[in-house]
Image (cartoon, rainbow over all chains, first blue to last red; front, side, top):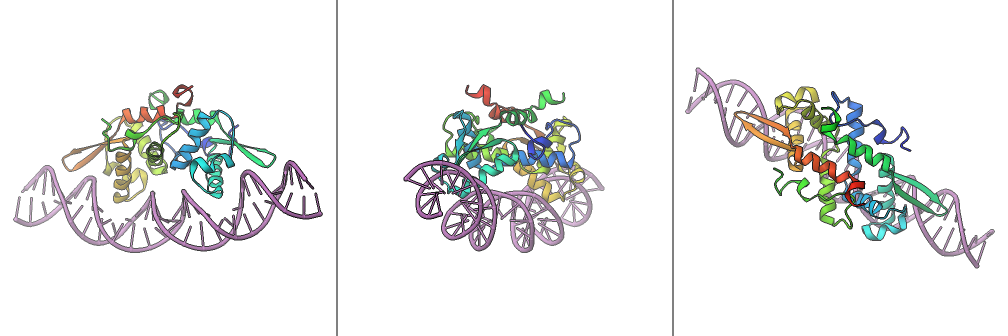
Length: 114
Length: 114
DNA sequence: GGTTCATATCGACCGATGTCGATGCATCGA
DNA sequence: TCGATGCATCGACATCGGTCGATATGAACC
């Protein structure tokens, strides 16, 4: 649902004229969320596995401790790229396809302005 | 021309199955290159101004010292997003449209695999 | 050759960030 | 109610990265 607190909410295409400081920072936050190889792998796993995944299923493939995985998931949720859903003891994360398509739109330099 | 030394050369779409460590790191490097608001502004300026820009024309709009601007330009060139061309005393930078479109392709989750 | 100018590199500083063990907080099952 | 389980938070540590002044490099001009 991409509420106003996520980074993706304040973004504007890279080809937009005269990017403001706030727009540049929001865009940078969004890209920075994917600036870590483990977070790239998380998004990759959530893309190939179309179903939500819980933290306990990520620690082993990533080779990271549980607090570290939680840290990365929080970053991705704050960026707006992931959605979090509590199911009993488990926290299930899934891709926010709306945010991902908006991210793709940021880079569409040709179609953006010209 | 995107030679093999740039980050964009080792990238693979986010929707590719079973991302390797190297692919994840190359993709993360590419996103991290746009994970700084000043670098987002640089790409934005190079997109709107279709012509190459020299460092001396970037320090003022960015509000940064010259060595800092050179640092950011180097990062963007290493990522493969910018091309550098020496013209006498000046260094002119321009967008590498091939790399940018490849970056856009990374995020095309739907078209990538499904 | 010497001067000037644009840029790159170096060194240092410091805040941001990735990482993990320990701990806290819910939730579920017995 | 109690122990077990899954996850988030905290605190500490090490590393990375942005920033700038000082300096080096290289090109143009006289």
